[in-house]
Length: 432
Ligand code: RM4
Ligand code: MN
Ligand code: MN
Image (tube, rainbow, N blue to C red; front, side, top):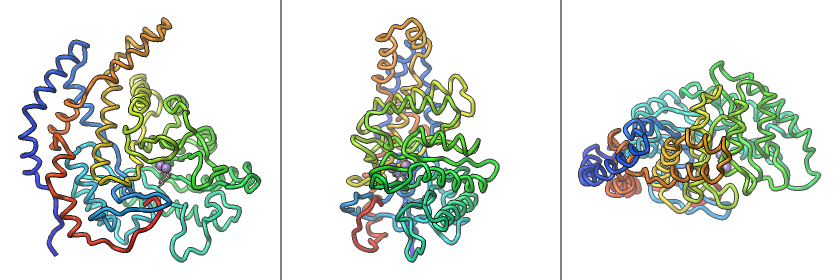
């Protein structure tokens, strides 16, 4: 069998050669504009180049809704092919050097081989995600009525064992964190004892924490609703925070941007979690109504910027223990996932760069003197600055493509994969 198609460095170089003149002109203009504001564009470009966000393995396959999934052409059929797609995202975009795997979806016999394959593309593994929200074929103890908080101790033990197994796999992959999201909850008032369910969750998770290696962390992910629609056990950041407090210094709270009540002030939640040294990091995505898992920055870029504004604030004042993990968690139902993920990483870099150019001194002065509009305009000045040329130049210097989606389309990657990866099975519903 011939080696799978990959995009050549020459193609990227040719693509860049066509665009380099124009982008350099735009970058030089931006550089001058930033210099007038006392901002060193070169230093900013270096920070942007060092920014990295993990790609979720489940994100490179076409997603779906509970109604249907419309598979794309040449989808990855296993985790090795998923890694090939992650490699393309990193090759062209240069903002996604890590992969966040999901088990048992990504289960293989040989994890050394998986790690090696990723490393051959210059990729490493970030947090491993456990899955106790669906049953596997032949599973006797069902998760239908919960996992870590299940009323039946045997089901809880199974869910604990799965998480411990994820830690073991993660160790083999070089990961340092386990993300635990449970679908546990109830659909009817009275169905579940709200207090006992949380007690069972905390007790079960304590056993997972006990299995963590010394340099590992566990990320608790809350979610307001879905698939449970009346209550969820870890419903909000308050519950997550309280659980993390009880679980001790290895437990942190993960913020998935789509998992909050409508209109909630997510950036303030981020600030609070930083304040109490319990911010694990993020599952980035965007949403209009709920856990929509839309592309990062596609609906509310200002909110994304405000989240990064809090992160830069924390970084600058050297907040204790501040080391957030950045991961994308999206479902690509109508786009080519590779394109969506490249663009999403750019949107995250954009928010990061814009937050970095906020004039912190001026902002603080306005805040201290209660100049409400003045403070707001400091943020707006940064947010309305078009940093695109700087992002493109940082990408180009790192060996990526000036316009990743255009280069990707020109490469014919997806059409080649459609031939190399004939579809397996029929259509299905479900998130992946
Ligand atoms: C959940 C949650 C988890 C993700 C699954 C696929 O809503 O966001 O992080 O692993 O979806
Ligand atoms: Mn998530
Ligand atoms: Mn979600």
